[in-house]
Image (tube, rainbow, N blue to C red):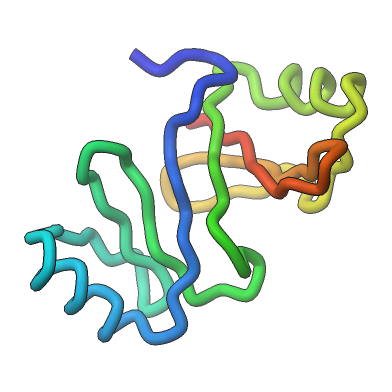
Length: 110
């Protein structure tokens, strides 16, 4: 069961999706679910995905929230900077934020 505020997903950048998937499949036996040419998800201990989109230029830890709007308000009240407002993606919605030390993170919900 997913819990509020817990790490739930890790998104990693990929400059060449085909080469990236081939490497992880060959080295570790990973299996992927493609969501278009720019995104491939994996479930290998910790769920995650590789993306070629410029929005994720480095690893992006993603937390879970049952109530996305309430979590957005908590992040803002705690001093987080919202870098991408709530948006939809296949499987849910999420927002991105930067913490006081400059770490980029995201929060998602179904």
